[in-house]
Length: 254
Image (cartoon, rainbow, N blue to C red; front, side, top):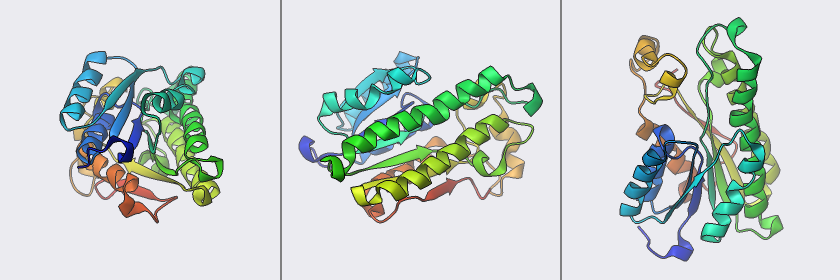
């Protein structure tokens, strides 16, 4: 792992304080990234992630932000640039599902919040990151990874259709931005986890969802956050230098 700070990648991870975001932070720290981690609440959890990553040799900055506030979201990339001087990677990881339940019972206000956090905030962040990274604008290039979901392609009936819709929109953001900015030195890709052991299911009202769904997964189990992190690390690495506009599904066969 390099310790030459000017040559180290600098990656923003939204929702980097727990769950899949924390696993991505751990993996990227081990791979030699400096990190700018956003979190909404539970500062102690975010501090614990930062402590582990610093112990692995990373410079780490924490940034508390409510991404549903799009003006606040617009400040994330500038804050990271101010802290490190450059940003080479962005992982749009933060997201919410809304409550698990029938489509007709989903309040429109909840669906609006899902779209603000899962779609509009990534648009704001991605635009800012591309404007900074684009070689056409004087940047040095970079890579963006959007954390989508297997739900984007199955619709999640009886579960959370608006969430699935939001992740399908994120997939289209990847495809469009990848094509538009490929010549500008910016790669944009997606990682789509299947059901994974994180707290997101408890927040949706079904803490046992990963175990309950295991029988419908070809591999017979839900995934673990570190299994998602490996795909993200690949897409941010030089090994993926000719990879853009793709979606890596980490779904146990679904």
